[in-house]
Amino acid sequence: MAQLDQILAQETPPLFYLQGFDGVNLHDDRRAIGDQECSWMENFIPLGAGNARTLYDNATILYTAAHTIVYDFSFNIGTTFYKALFLSNGSAIAVNLAGGTTSMGGAGTFAVSPSLPACAQWGASGIVIVTSAGYYAWDGTLYSPGAFAPAWLCGFTTLVTTGTTHTNTTLDSVGSVVGIVTGMTVTSGTGDIPVGTLVQTFTSGPNVITLTQAATGSNSGEVINVGWAMPSGLTGTAIEFYQQRAWVVNGAEISFSAPANGANFSTANGGGTIISSDGFLKTAFLNVKQCNSFLYLFGDGSINVVSNVQTSGSPSVTTFNNQNVDPQTGLGWRDALTVLGNSVCFVNPTGVYQLYGGNAVKISSKIDKLFEKANFSTIKPTLFVTSLFGVRCLGMVINTLDPTTATQRTLMCLWNEKKWFIASQTLTGIYATTMQVGANPQGWANDGLNVFQLFQTPSNTLQKKIQSKLWAGRSNLIFKTVMDVYTEAQDESNTGVVLSGTLDSDTQAAVPFTINSNITFQNNALGTITFVNNANQALNFTTNPQGVQGSGASQVGMRLGLTFTSTSEDFTLIGCGVSYCEESYYGH
Image (cartoon, rainbow, N blue to C red; front, side):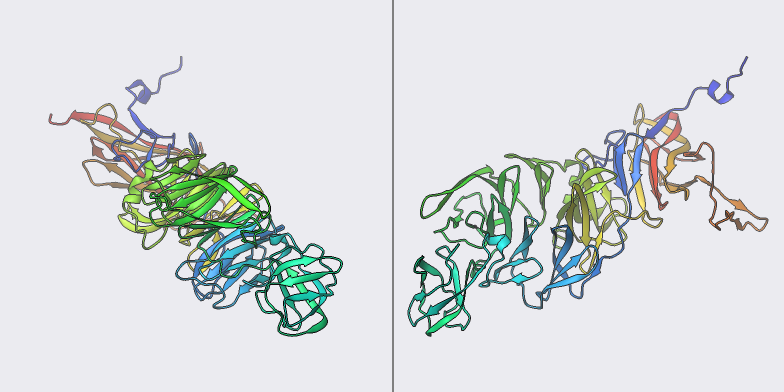
């Protein structure tokens, strides 16, 4: 008959064990969070129960700018993906993710003060840029204010024909007027048609155009260009495309273009401007974003929604519904805004919010303490979306106090739409964006000079850290003594897993410990012996069963917990905990 193990024959010691990985809770005291919550969880993603996977480090630097990056925008033209980097000297660079760069404009081209440039992508054809000084388009060529707009933006390829000018407003003997619309810009090869001249009227057979300004000369058969021009005098701080129209934010004003023409804001063609007089718009609209067939206008203290946009009549008139959905919740910073699935997420000084339809709900209560200790003047929060091990996650860059080290640092808070966790990289990103490649969102960041992709490379230098609850067991009035500390981990890189950290107590100083899954061989001089295979690669020997490790430990307290750190390259933490025995009631 089999004999019962003498240890198991005794009373099994109680165990505190973290395996559920329910994410970070910084809202409640460490002693009061859920048993499976963490008071800190950095560079681990909680994929499931018994499945906390280490996060990867940043990729190699894609590009290093010669001047400070003040605005960073991800976009694609066709199947080519770019980062548009706007620099502090007013220049801009398009960086191809596959390699190579293209200048978008030299120093002084784009105003970077008093507000930063903003971009929006029109289909997969190009981007539009709005600054405090002008409105531009770029598709490999820069289209500045007053220049003819690209066909992809305005829906018309500039007509090149011939005609005869006179020292009046008549342009006759025009070779073709096909496609011409009142309000288009007209230029001439000799320059005798003044800058800013438009088509006032036109007839066909004979082909005659009446100009809004008189020509300064008489020339027969000269080259004539007719088309939509990039608007002059249009400025703004944010831009979005919705219902085939451009929507430009400038303070309390929202300008919108004619339908299917992002270069024409004329009221005669269906464009226009609205000015908010709502009391809940405290200062200005900060950004505008479309999602779920709605256009959201984000003010500094409120949110409006635009819908049912229609243009009809002659001359064309555009109408739409503009309703307030929240008079007290607004956007804190222009670029702290992103789409997440069928919702819009945004940040203000009180937290992170998710907007579904007309309902803005705070989703960041678990990390409230990070907002309480944040330094928003050093780093303005930005939002991005990325896919981590097949899980779509929302990310936020923030400068705040790390409660585990009591140091101010810039880090990332990530949310997998259920749980929050913390991330960092070797390169500290201060501005992050989403690069959407097909159905795969990628997180990208810059540190002011360097641009890099996030979470790409397993690292044996990036620190991973988990801090558990301070567990009380059946009573927080019973003193407890730790017997052993245990971990379970799956090595994903075959390089071994080393976990070190501290046994924590509510009454005693933390006690350090180390657990190593590798077996180390030493010679008589205590030097390490390394075994290699035929390819001269180092061999690692691990204990059996792999993953379950333990170590003797000593700690006393009424509440006990763990803080684990590791720089091991790539592993899944299955669980960790301590066995303990109860000693006495407090006061006895």
